[in-house]
Image (tube, rainbow, N blue to C red):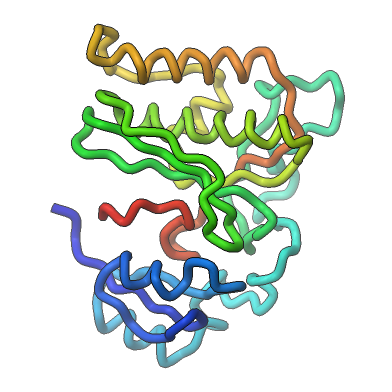
Length: 233
């Protein structure tokens, strides 16, 4: 069983400390520039709430709630392809971000068992509005779902002609995208046919398409749960 978490909301419909992600979501979804973060203990949450968001949220960067483009800790760690000849495989995934790019899409997965039924969605990072939702897929894994969700977002944005940033909290999915290789032990049989068909589509999409989007790791430790989170912690 996952350890309990406490959610601090400094800026939202209602500020305070909440014991569940669902309660936290109710305060921040659709609220412009909401500022919130999860903590492992109630005492940590109480201290952070008293200190204020400037000290604890987004590494204390007061401009972290703006729509400015993400700034990366490592120079040159951008996933944006600037050369028309540069394939997606050549793009590197940013390792750390100092502030959130709210003009972006966030994706996440919800599972019941691993393997088990998989759902995923993409949301507007600023508003929390759902942009696409797929599932449940009968029998898959969290990692495969995360990988497919990112590529779905890439395809969604390419069709719109958009170069918005895409956030995922899955290091595994980002590694698969970077390496153009799926390293899953999930067996291929009739029960996993659908998830593998989507994963194969996603891999083929990456190999045959160019994109200008940054694919960034959501900094859960500093920013709280990703905006697309299913609340199944």
